[in-house]
Picture 1 (cartoon, rainbow, N blue to C red):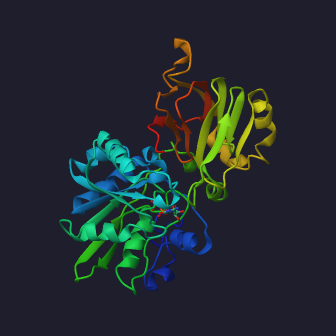
Picture 2: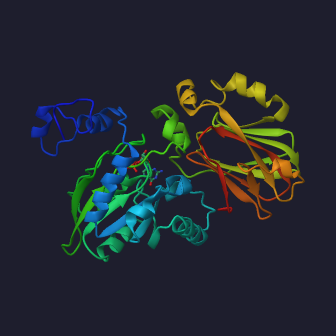
Picture 3: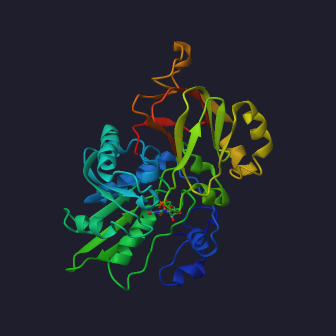
Amino acid sequence: MQTEFPNQPGYAPAGALERPNPVCRRCFRISHYGEFTPVELPEASYQAVVREALAQADQIVYVLDVFDINGSLVPNLAALLANRAVHLAVNKVDVLPAEVEPEALRQWIRRVVESAGVKVADVWFVSAATGSGIGELMDGLAHGDGTRVCVVGMANVGKSTLLNQLIRRSGPDAKPQFTTSRMPGTTLGMTRAKIVLQGGRTLTLMDTPGLIEGHRVTDFLCADCLKATVPATRLRPRVYQLDSGQTLFLGGFARLDFESGAHQPVVCYVSNDLVVHRTKLERADAFWESHQDDLLQVPCAACRARLGPLQPHRVWSDRARVNPGQRTADGLRIGRAGGDIVLPGLGWITLFGAAFAGRLYVPDGVVARVRPRLI
Ligand code: GDP
């Protein structure tokens, strides 16, 4: 905390420091007015803070957003961890569709994280918002080796909300101490809190900043667009029976053109507040031009400018007849068992493996990928 430079991290007016539990002006404004002042945190500074926190930690909780597992992997974390195993806290399970099979999901997440070089001690499904699974995670930490617990994860996966839940669970008088917000990049430095567990054992919790990589659509959005895009309630599958010659718009964020193939179901798992609109492929360009500011609702013009224009990527299924020239390196291939096309920060689209050839448009820099079907 400092009282000299209002535009730099940790600024608080001198008077604020005399109050009990002082917070910086930025956190005060986030908590009280929902206002947000972005502060740049370069990757090198991020790594320095996380390295210092890890050096002090006995146990490490790696928080992932279940809605966006690949998008919530911290780049280069394996190097910072130097072979130490983490507790994986898979957060926001309250938004998962009820049909997801937890054991298959657990195994898939473990594989994804381990293939990024990170050793996994155990996997906990939690919802920091509702508190589900938090008691179990707390028991796991209480029985783990050592009392200093460091929490790492990308911006907006719910680290601070999770820590506040752990604090709340530690006793009726415990007060949440970490500032949370919908905006990525709320936590800038390492912050600490102590909690006392049943039986008197004390844990020291250390929050770390979240990295913003710019690969998720949510890394570019204003508070209003985030509200419509980040799911706050359980995802309702939206099923479309598609024929070739049709296009699906996911708000103004993405567009799936079905150029040729068999009649088939396509399921969209995105925020219930996001508009999904089907139209004829031949009319899709005109629709896009005229309806970004009304029917499609989000992103707003300012967020669109930050996201940049949509870029097309080929999509084909193994059952589709496509010539080799259409199988581009940046394309998305759907196997015979189907797959989920994951749109980082936005959700996913499930195809079931029928013949499909077309194009997916996403903002430049947002990397869509295919994973095995969750459902
Ligand atoms: P951090 O940047 O990782 O510290 O993330 P925050 O704790 O500030 O949370 C980011 C956003 O995710 C906020 O809008 C939270 O309300 C939301 N959030 C956090 N945990 C959950 C959860 O378990 N479920 C849901 N639906 N939203 C959550």
